[in-house]
Length: 264
Image (cartoon, rainbow, N blue to C red; front, side):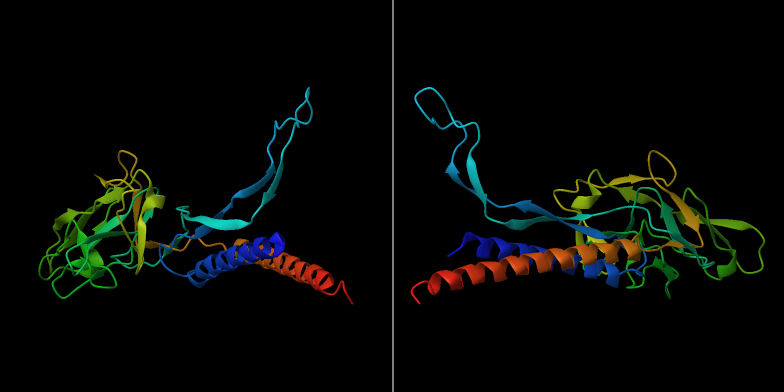
């Protein structure tokens, strides 16, 4: 069978995966703190029909070889941690990170996860939790009879509020954030959450706005960093590449049909 059939088929598979990746980005265009991904590819093995340097005569060598490529495969999906646009919400528990860093939560099974989603809530126990009810780490617990309208969170993470009719400002706690040597190596687990992997390295805890950590913006959330126009252009390019590979399959099929019908 013609090599081009299998080569083009690998190209169609690759572009289908590319479109799947782009579609996931577009579907999360309004997901708080979402970071887009990019499909990356690499060429497959080459069939060496003649190696470069093979003797062409007793006194000379071939300066170049003859190699036939066998297609493409998906190499990785790169998570792009470009800053998303901040959106003003005026919600007293909303936080956006400008710069490097993640919030940390404790899941129901006791494991830890990390997120850029700063749409925090206050539960019935007066704790700051995310939309799934996972507690922020370190814990932030507001005192009884606190006034929600008085809650403030500084750029370096200090949480304060007022209690009842008291005008005195009370310290509640400290929001710390976490960064990684290789954030692209974090494992996506859904729910706007990531988990540590061997590739990401261990967490580095710090105070916001210090030692390379991002700073916090109170009353804002970070939106998705997906750019719709850019993704649509990428989808058009992927679609055209898919069509070109399908044309290569059709052409290969036509050549085989010609060979099969030679005796007629």
